[in-house]
Length: 413
Image (cartoon, one colour):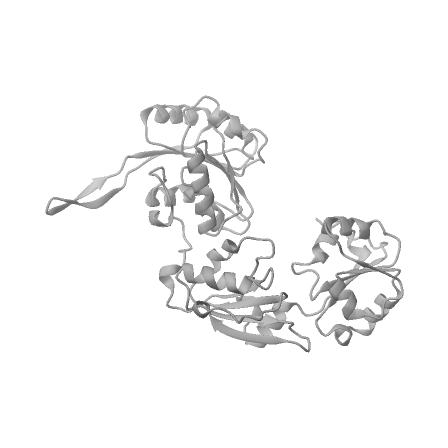
């Protein structure tokens, strides 16, 4: 969090956005700040774009980036300029620096971001687009945003990203997505070229580029539904899976909210954790699964369904619960009758948090009755029957009945 505003703080640091048009895009204020700064930090490309303005010492970023940030912060009291691409507070250095400064210490002069320029070229309303970065992040993060009629701006990692993205879209069955690769936006070498994902991008893409994706309306089969209870066929599993109907009820009881953390104890195929993370912005999950093959399968499912940041712990509860971040919700799909599992999970749960436990055997049901007597909550029995063939006829074949305990931890606990 940025420090609160201090009216007596004096800006010693100026963060200046630089576009591909270099000096031509800088205001007179930005030019003066760069010329008068004792230190000017930036990438080699940015420093080249503003030459020969700086009169002070020019410092090119070198890895690791965090070391460069500390170098800037150590110069508090000197006049320092940091150069950044476009809008420094949009996937840029501005937000990183602001976390360590009082608001009055830093002045920011943004330029138009590459996203703003891309939308202007395409005639897209920026507020109606999803912006996703794949710079140092898995491409699978795009999956939840690939919806009929969706428009995405993808911040590329390098020159290979357009080809890798097109190939991935084809593998998902989204070969008809209209793609635009955009390079050097706002500069003299600007290019914008369109292609269908199935046809692949041009061969001569620059390393600095972004992609715009226009998803057609008729690709519903290849897009993930945005509601609880994905079809069971979405998940690779060995039979250890919270089934679609039960999963939908379970997610409703867990009641995910933006930014919350779930513990999923006895992950199975990871379906509950994955849908938790898909449900709201910033939702995180930690899944405990003791069987190595299942733990690996959870990772694959998370990658395939667009939540590659799912944290999988190969361990058995309660032993694997120690040292984990405090959860906002806990789901126990297996191991609830094991001594200490519910006790340790309940103790770790944040006040106001929710615990949901599903049981199919009477031993676990007995433990849930005890839990309700100790911590309150409610018990519900869930039954699902699906139509199936019986010879030349049809009948409803019942699945195993699930007993579900749901409880909220009091704020006074």
